[in-house]
Image (cartoon, rainbow, N blue to C red; front, side, top):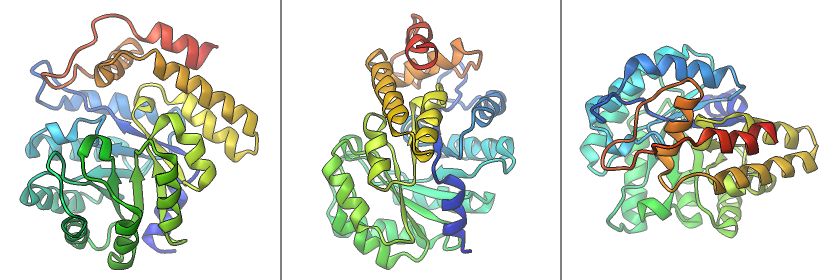
Amino acid sequence: MNTIAQLRQKLQHGVSPAMATPLKEDGYTVDTAAIPPLVNFLVERGIKGLFVGGTTGEGVLLNAKQRKILHEVTLEAVAGRVPVLLHTAANQLAEAENLTHHAASLGADGLVAMTPYFLGMSEEALFQYFVHLASLAPHIPFFAYDIPQLAVNGVSPKLLGRLCAAIPNLAGLKCSRDDMQLIRQLLDALPADKFLLAGNERIALGSIALGADGMISGLSTAVPEPFVACLNAFYAGDYQTALDWQKRINRGLDHMPADRIGAIKRILAERGIPVGNPMPPRGRVETAVWPAVEEILINN
């Protein structure tokens, strides 16, 4: 079995939280001592993998030195219990190259690269970007990361098809779109040996039903239980229970404050896993979040 197939088997049918990045009081420095308790909290609750340094992980806000520290300490804390996917993209190509080489040297289970963000790019430029980054670590499964609602640039079905044909180590796509029709087209564009990890929490079950192999979720870094339960029910053939969990997840999301990362970090602190606050100037959440969310997602 090749490395992509092995990784797929490990991540399949499960939830891989987009891990929150613990930060010290200054808001810019990774709190390395807080990473092992967070990792243990998640592994003990049945996750299948970890996605590190992505959107919820504030990876694009950290400088390269802090991103490397985050990657190193997380891999050490996980100690092979679940696969670890490291996000290595950056707006500057040289920084993305540096981070990719570093992640490869650590023995990451998979590499993930968001499209360059803020300024629009042509599909040809995006194609060259992904091909180049994947070639820097040809022995490690590589995922393109599609989140155009935040990054401006996205991965179209046509581009995905080209990437599948051109990148031998392409494992597939991490897709956070909210357009179910586009997600269906992206799934249709994937060959049988590639796979998609769903990133939009509100339509996760629909993505899974259409053929996504698993999901990466930001809220699950603080509340993994309902996401694990939803997918477990679906793959056990209990579709009504899975749907009930999806509806509960959506109600829980409705009760989250607008400052999403601040709310996620607040929930973790209230659950006994303090990870600091979001990187400034993103908003802190100073009032309790967990009691209301717990009532919906855990106790209801």
